[in-house]
Length: 394
Image (tube, rainbow, N blue to C red; front, side, top):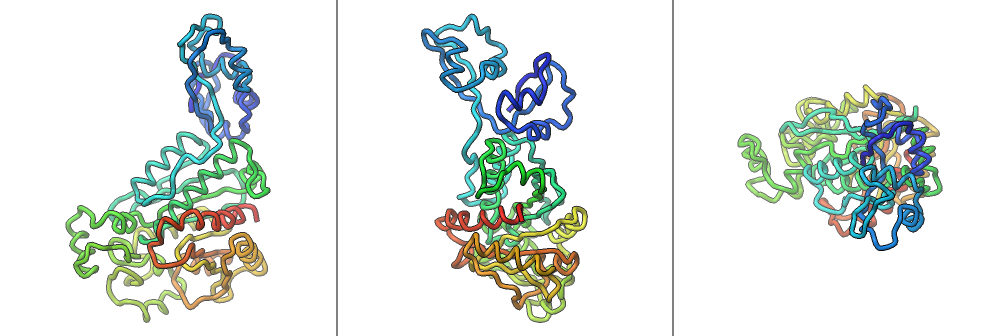
């Protein structure tokens, strides 16, 4: 939320007054010029309205709500504290100590957009960057949190019918941001240390077109509407659709033994598994390759469904023993089975390991048939949050 800076105030003063880490306030106001009258973002706070009762004073109200008196003054600058009357309404600042978004729903691009706005408004130290667009021109966006040299990338919804992974990732980002402002430990880890040591770069929805197709049906665009219906044998049930809107499986699009997948996978666009005519033909896959090259991630975690397994090797090119140590920790905190090699190629994780010789992981969340039912969400999140946290601190 915003406050109006007063003469003589500083970001450091606001940090001490409101018990919010200075670095988060500073990062929420990168362009602040520090002058009276300037609007300043204060992360992780909400305001509740309070109706003045007979006998109330600012001092007694601050005492009742366990607030510094000047915090009450700061959030009520248009109120004369010596002239408050019964039934007047004032603002009571409170630190947000609970998740604000609901990942446990049909998580399409509309839900993602709504939740990104909530997070960015509440935690403006989170930075949003449009990294590209889908076939249908929908934004593919990345959220960036932290100042550390170690860069950890996590993504979700490479496949349309694995949309539950986007809700899981957004829920984690919300929990992490909340812990930062409230200074609440995460599995014994100080969030401030994670923030200073690590930069999280998260792409919650790699394939927005595919997700919307699965959840909302064919697009309005006549060309692609006709195409997806044809590829789906005329059925309007797209629940089994894994590919992007052009019928290309994005996680078979990377130049990591791609030719081996081409031989044994569909030879034409299809709801799943078609690797395309060549590696990196699809804008969504190109975007992921470009940001990986640009940011030089130190490790990547790709969230998929299903199987309660995690894959961490590729053709012996993964760095040892680091990849194995991280995989063992992931297995320990989640209960998922760590598997080094699987008979699969051309995936994002495969390509990352091959190109950068750094730890890469594919996590298969939950168990059953895709798309996984929302009744699994809480259990999936409970299992997966440990993996995402370990990905940041290890």
